[in-house]
Length: 202
Image (cartoon, rainbow, N blue to C red; front, top):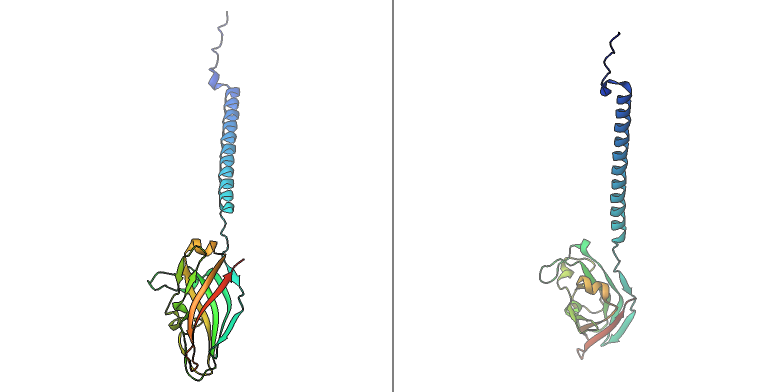
């Protein structure tokens, strides 16, 4: 009577290893796919977050075209603009950097026999809620485009920009304001003229 051959253990059979390899491949593919989905979801979230963050422009322009002649002196306010001036390296009277400003372009022409005087940066901007904003004085010595304050000789005309520093919230919300300043004319009566120029922004 022939003796039976001992049976091979299951892990020594070829079909067992085929099954193991197939299972490992399936697990690897499943893990890889899940990772891709996770990355894709993260990427989408980042994109949505960046697209929802937008910087609203604050540039506002008012073409005033205001002009008045008193005491043989013609004062003109041609334009007022609210804008970002952080790239100009300006500072206010306290040494703080100016980020936003209401910039007023104006000119004063003196046709009188004596000197006239104008210091518009010593004037004020008055907001509808009563807030009073002082001008940034001293910029005329460091900024070419600034209005050169002081005496205006007979027959001379002075043109330039006057800067009024604004807080971020003011720059974004201002719709109208008043520009108040004083001019001392060079006529024989030394006429003192107090101006209020209305500014309306769209």
